[in-house]
Image (cartoon, rainbow, N blue to C red):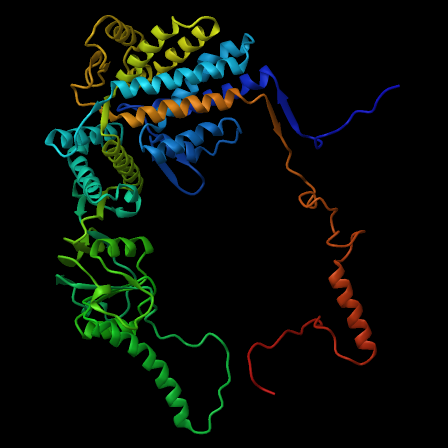
Length: 589
């Protein structure tokens, strides 16, 4: 007697399991790594991505991975580790994807030969842990308070900018970035870097016209009403009032009926509306403020009122800019104009409305709390400025991470070669399959110097042979990496190619974890998108509350009550006939 088959999954569901699907997932991850492979290093190429709306030109790994919109479920793991590297360190987003892809590529042979994934995962986890420990041993600590420490920060920042579009302008941007981050570090607010350091873009002009407003805030002039040109545009030691209040006369939103017996009563109602706005404006002036900023609109009446009294005002200020001004000036954002006093007002050394290119900027300089900074970027095209902004964000994060870890290692593939040598020697002490797996992990680390050579047009085989010989046979060879400028190899630490040690530690840990995640998947199930609109709720179409389909129960009950009431001459329950609608408003008989 034949037993009927048991169907567990919906028709059309795609399932794949076993060795074949594991190899398929590894191939998908390699394809993702190949997409960003050529962007690595100072000689890396850019990618142009068009998403149907805008064009993005970038060689930032995290930006490219985000814009690619990868559909393969397993390959999305590489997108996640790229995003985490960007959030945690800021730089190294391409190398972490390359490393994960290369580790999987080196391990694919073991999978195909039938080695159990758990054995592979156990050994690469231990190899990843040893790699992180080795980087921490190799790292060189420094003191940020000394001139040598400041030089270290500048070198780390320049290394981060080396592979970016603005690499030729390091001398301009590196001191800007280090100054901005150090001011936060001294105040103990490094964790708030994203909210306290703003980057503003102004198309036009030359990139060398970019500038830093240190210890201050700059934001673009907001929408303004008539009377704005008559305002005072420059103050010394002004008092700043920050509001989250609407200073605008508006008509009532609701329709209402007011019955009056005398025309003078109508005038008193109009006067009361005006008195409310004037009371608010008087309170702002009496508190002694010279500058009034509000998150909500400041209307034409208020603009003219402040202009007549020598004040400056700006409404519709962006929330982030208002918070930065509050932090910098020591002011407090007020939600009411009642009971304003000196304690809620901020101050700064000077305020001026400057013209930068075609835009006007409100600049608060020499603020008492040296926390906030604003970097104003100039450039020829929108794409160039957007990529410059991403580059500066990466460099800010690298300097932040260097200040936190207070330790650096040499870049240019030197660390990878040294860790690879260490793991190869360690593998010789392991018995069984683990020896081959750890050796494969060590070989995967060589992808970074190999790809740096390929992207620069050098012969990677010759250079890697030289690097292996240097690291293995010479005691002073641990900092030797790829010489991008001249070809061949050089001591990258002496050349000033430095990276925070946290960058490498996070990169190795994330890529190892991603490889383990991919190897731990033994079955992939892809459910088809349903064509049945009721499938999502598990109900047949049209069964909105009724067991056999048809109208929902509440509608049916309403219709039945309407019919009974109509027969008795009563009113209906509220279901109006065709062409009839409710009247809006109050009052009336």
